[in-house]
Length: 80
Image 1: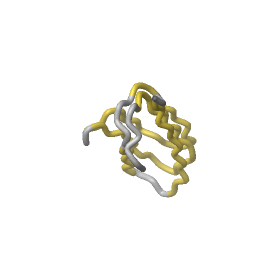
Image 2 (image 1 turned 90 degrees about the horizontal axis):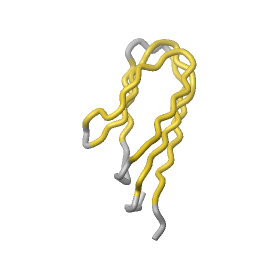
Image 3 (image 1 turned 45 degrees about the vertical axis):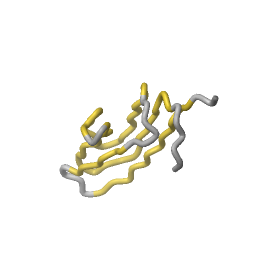
Image 4 (image 1 turned 120 degrees about the horizontal axis):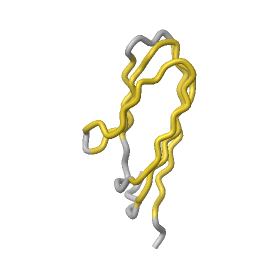
């Protein structure tokens, strides 16, 4: 994705099902910014201020036998 610039917000919607437990993290500057433990039916929404045109989401299984996870995201930007 090309540099969009003027980013001011990010919305992430994580949904699906896990047979077990996992950790999901949104990283900012290579450091955890938001972290959640997920299990069973998953429906998680993160949204808020965000000023970079890239985001990294890290998935770390803890005790997962099977999974089906969907991640949808949207950067909001100012059109000048």
